[in-house]
Image (cartoon, rainbow, N blue to C red; front, side):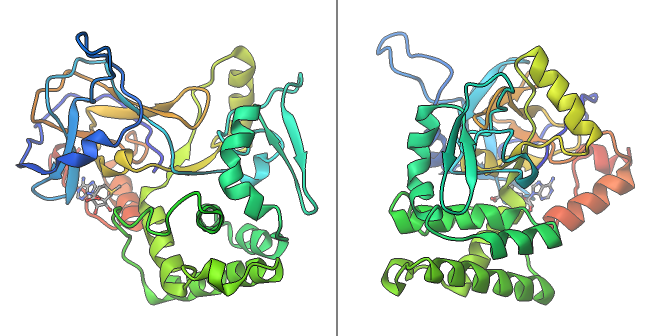
Length: 332
Ligand SMILES: C[S@@+](CC[C@H](N)C(=O)[O-])C[C@H]1O[C@@H](n2cnc3c(N)ncnc32)[C@H](O)[C@@H]1O
């Protein structure tokens, strides 16, 4: 998802349909923005996941939220930098690295990567200890030639599962994209490349029991509609200059990432919430206007400034649904 939000006059509000079927998801966010005065513990964010009338599961406000409020923060489950920016962003948190130094270079037999801090090196151990043992050139070349970015996220999850840092079922809870036979064929080829790369690196079948065609396709189908394209707002003047240069090069995204809770936010072409990244991949969900308790929180997956037809086509091709948000229904 690449939400580029714009404010429009609200037409209708989506109301909470059924409570609290999936409310336990609201407790999975690791960081909260408020503190309980009595216990001094972080209080849960003012949201819960429940069933909507027409868009599967969605996120609903459990109390009123003010315009501009931080609803909650979210840490990613999987991240991967844009391949063209491997020397420019942290391999783990996607923070932009500055030419003045301060980044940490890590060399393996097959590649050189960069981290912004020791903490990011530590947090990368879960996948990098496995990843660095293999020669990914054939897999990377396949993705480069076909312009694919999501297989890098599948590769990272596979390495996390082999190292024991994540369960193979990590993404099962997310909605998968519908797939056509040609897509499945392409995914089967990628699966073959991933498996043979790991086998050549010496990983044994017992370590890769989870790594079946079905697993690969299931994970990629979920990543296709739930991955976020990460565009940093930028924290410094240098960041802004870099972003400007990147937009000229048509590469404003520092990478892609998958989150759990933010994946339950449905789309609206006139959203009441948005997701932003300031200096790294840690996300902030914020209210764009006053939201009432029980109202569904929706973000915009695409550039809301496009016209009605362009938005409908993009949402259908990219996410497989016909948008029936109030703005689309009004023909705007
Ligand atoms: C990122 S998921 C959002 C969570 C999803 N509803 C679920 O149950 O997991 C995106 C999917 O939600 C549904 N969806 C999101 N926004 C929608 C909308 N405005 N109209 C219809 N379906 C929508 C579509 O099936 C879409 O592919």
